[in-house]
Length: 469
Image (cartoon, rainbow, N blue to C red):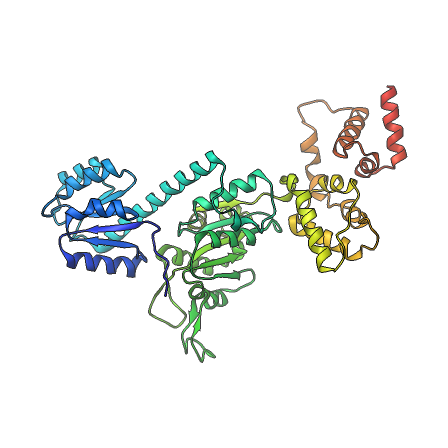
């Protein structure tokens, strides 16, 4: 079976005691999931191995025959500054430890020290190296404005610069095992982004989707962790959980903001320890799935009101992207409209219709609370009723002419009228509204009159009067 190698870079263990190398390698894999390791007991091979293999971290014994550890440390730091070094020595000498840190080592551990402290130190070093590599990759992509794997984003229809920046960021963090948090309003395409994250990670396993909305604590634990036979009444056979199904792949947890408090604790433990217990089992299993979560809710507000754990929030938000709403991506409106129009026509077995030139202008003045999903629904509805050569605007007018203005009404006073400034006259307000409507409608009086809620002749009369004035 092909297993994902973690971390993305190799870890070279250097010690003249083969038994220590063997025990440390086993502990790394069993307790932390680190399986991308190289070993040598001969200090003379170290520099060659670094040159020939993708080494990112060296666990270096200090006292060895042939070439000493402190000499190797200086040579690695000088010739391979991107490679981290942790010293593991048999002696507890403070002065030596200080000198090693001063020469560039990440940390210093004594072999007789508690094993868990050493493993935690190695995990910290991996996190540090991954962040540095991600920052370097992001800097390179943003400076050159390139995408290395544009094919993974091809299902996402966009020409928007914010979206392209998101793609570049995702490429930069693709090799990380840390969670990815995807936020954004309903209908912006969070699941498509999660799919792109999975493809970019180049993992051998599947992407498994779980919508946690409405799942109670027991169902959540059983769904994610599975259960052993006899775990509860009716559990007549073993059940594999979604985490195991997503082994060496991606576990996508949608609507994470609806997770109960008890389930939040279970998820936090999974993220912290990398281990979980199937229901009814006293033997832990190690998770080899990458967690990608999504929500349309403001989790920070939920943290503030106490309904979402702060420690879980920070664990999930290690890599975070906010997908912009469609109203913030007006440059994508036309290409998305054309895409859905052709797709809908094909599904309804109709020829792709043409549409009035006023339609894109009408759409550009709508705020789309349902985002891309709403646009798709409108297009499909219009095409399903389409009979003539030109697509009717009636479906779009019906929705856009009756928008939900509750939120706009609530913020109208604060948005328009500064209490510290004198109020404008009605005449001034009228002129501003008409000018703004005509600008948004790109000079089309029919569309502008609809925005203002008056007839086209009434608007024409007002325009003529303003010109005379």
